[in-house]
Amino acid sequence: MNPMGPECKTLGLFEKRIEGDDGLMELARLRFRQAGLGAEMHGSSPEQLESQLQFRPAPEAPVVVHLPRELNLAEIQGRRRIAEFASRLAGRVCGLVLHDHPDLAERHRVYLRAAQEMAARLEEIQGGPMLFIEYAAGLEPSVFAYFFKDIRDLGRISACIDTGHVGIWQARRTWLQTHPGEDICSLKSQPPGLLQAMSEVEASVQSALPAVLDLIEVLGPFGKTVHFHLHDGHPLSSFSPFGVSDHLSFLAEIPLPFEYQGRRFAPLMFGPSGLRRIVLKALECIAPAPVSFTLEIHPTFERLPLGDAAPLFAHWADKTNAEMMNHWLWTLSRNRSAMG
Image (cartoon, rainbow, N blue to C red; front, side, top):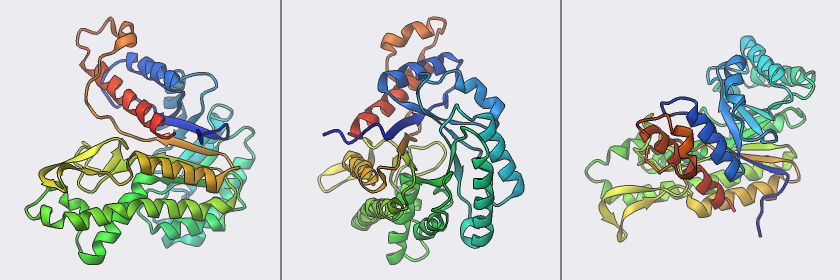
């Protein structure tokens, strides 16, 4: 039985991330429409988003906007800019995603009052989007959850659970219990002695999924819509050009320079089975409130022939970047299918 229903929106990261002209955005629009995906866009300003919105996959496709990372809800200027995005994009996007901040824990009352003020502003905007505060600053997940308990009556503000961020936090915490002062993610350089430490690495990695499921279970009873950033990860991952250990496909594995348990690859924190458990847990705990998911998976920089999209790039002599974009979009589509 397919668990996805009309109360559930599924989106993908929708931007270039690869050098090229707007043919890449036309390709993204085509592949997202074929996969039935909505779009999550990053924007530095409402004006900059206008150029991206013209490529939305379909008129009815849901769109979520990821706000600039430097915005802090606890600051007056931050709230002004959030209100500007909400007002300018009202009726065209269904959600705004804002990174959380250490102030959520360190200045809890200040952050709480800021959320209350922001919610009142959002209520005044007819057709305005939800504001989702994303787990991104590496706070204790229970502290993050406690904040949403405090604002459970604010109808226009809710949580964004980032599976990769929560998972990596938990893997680090588990590792620290037996390796004080050491960061498990520093092992991605695969130092001598890694083979002997692999059983402890695996135990740390396997602690990630229960942590994500527990956070969903805590937030579910608040009866509010929740947004998810879905991506996998592993402390040993060196795939990212940005140096992060997550934002990976749920279908990937980590190559090892040695054989471990009969294989030269290590499974990720969640994998396809973990992805399905996350989706099912979300629908079980949060529904009938709406649930939305964005596949926030970064480009792989592998290539895939353009096939039916070749006419979009008839003016390109070198199709390398178009084929890399096509592979990334294919990866998003495959992960969408793996959700169930």
